[in-house]
Length: 336
Image 1 (tube, rainbow, N blue to C red):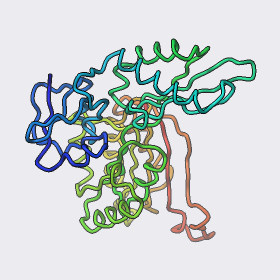
Image 2: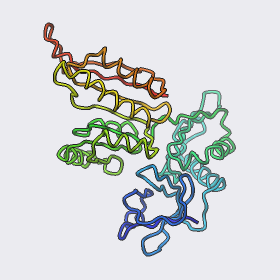
Image 3: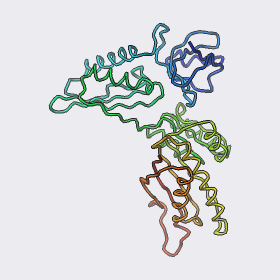
């Protein structure tokens, strides 16, 4: 059995019941520890803490499924967990009710969410979300068990809550925190300014998002290159850079900068992932902005679907005859 050993004094939170092992808490890997496989989590001294499924591409590297060393993660495991969840709800709700049947970590099945809907004629339908690599590995078994134990007439997958978010040029972290509020499982907020990152960390603490949102000082251009090189993938990426040009003479150079970050972001998005791209430069027109996005997509062989094209909101009124006040641009896209 592959094992993950924590660093010294990192096990207290886990022993108190928290099911997540973060990458910076791990001191040693024993064995291949391949993504999507089961591993034992040990304290530095060798105390067994639990068994979970590993994903080394995620900041939450291991999610614990059981603290019983004799229990293994297989179909029978999900049969027991789902049966327990069904029995708990059956004691509270009537067969005619609609309710959340499985609530991920709270029902000891990390990343698995299932909602039950009862129709007026008595049919039951399920909406299922596979939000982590761990449960996605057992997708077929889980769907089969749900069908057997609930008698559902239909099961629909809704795994559109993306696991990882990246907020590049984060400044104060507002986009990152909104991604967290919107359901992202983890968000990395990046800025080249140490002062900005300090502000983001303050805002993370004020909003109680310390377990999900993380701030990092880095050059976004370098980070995007490294993410592509290392095979990192994100479900949602937000690009809100400072103005790349302060004059019309520099518009062509700015075009190259905007194109590079958008192109690299598209390369590390999951298929069907969301890209939010912004520009706050008056000298980089909306026509240039959308031309740049389409050319970036063409260069990396991606298909983009615009879900929204936005400009200044009500708090940024545009004065007629004063073109400089009409400078904000934002595109919301899905990328394949």
